[in-house]
Image (cartoon, rainbow, N blue to C red; front, side, top):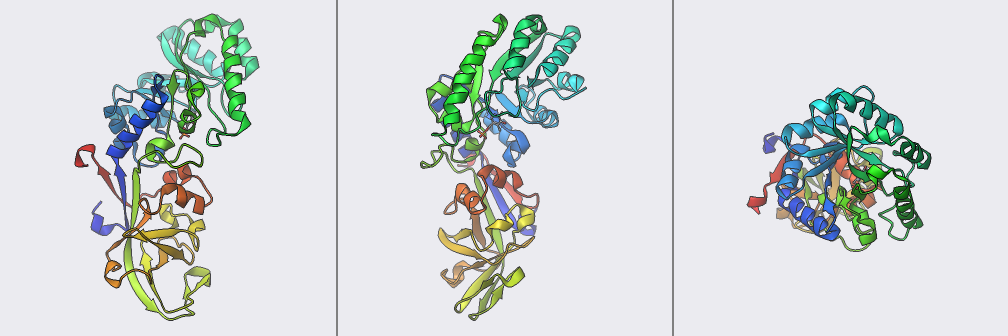
Length: 371
Ligand SMILES: *Cc1c(COP(=O)(O)O)cnc(C)c1O
């Protein structure tokens, strides 16, 4: 896309992404560190993100859907690709064709993969134990049923036993320890062939719960992309994403001017108002109207009035006139306006902000060598 024709620039720093991978890897060590790159690498573009992670040493990738796995396979022919949503019904040949490894979430899925492996095996898989999120995975009764029928594993090679934390972003939540205890207990129930299978437990926040949660393998996602994995302490990750909106127009108005749909904002004084070419159709949440801030040269300015589909309005009265002109840029995410702060203002989480980012930005990827 020609940047002159776009309303905003989305800048993804692949060097910072790689640095974040190294930080997570060293925090999780000696456990190995993979990467969750579902939903188009949290909205940032899997075709750019996954190869950059591979260059940083990442070999294990987790996607949600087999269709995402096919996309990833096409850009990384040698990567190990796990499909978290499991083995979709009648999709076995596609997993085989594209070398996708299902995370088996139930005994039914395991039976289907096992049966398919009898003709095409041995085949790799991971097995997902549900230790307390009650979403996907084997519960205790199914683990016992598997243990009673270990021949189901004959043609399978199980890379990892995985489980997923529900509350890792709340370090003091009692469910963290309960899930950890449950995982240790479930491991004792596994049949002999799985007793020494490596365990993958921690997501980004789980890595920061300490070594008890590390086991053999971690699967961070959001922290790779700059989201704070530590709950409420300062963010140890580097910033990866910047969103800069283009100024369309700057207007000088008197006091008592209404701004935006619904006239939800009224100027108190003589004001200067800039109109910026980003709206809720770009993933700039409507909830940010009259709430969020953006920044010009690190000076924060408030978003005033409602967010429209293609436009926001900001009060730039405090900014020197020459620093705020049509064609100039405003930081909407990044720099003085951290991703986590934008998410908080939108009453959501950074995951939803990133995965909502729109398709009409000019996307610029900073290659590690550019730094
Ligand atoms: C998304 C996901 C992850 C990564 O989680 P983050 O919180 O983004 O680090 C890991 N494991 C599973 C099963 C997931 O669904």
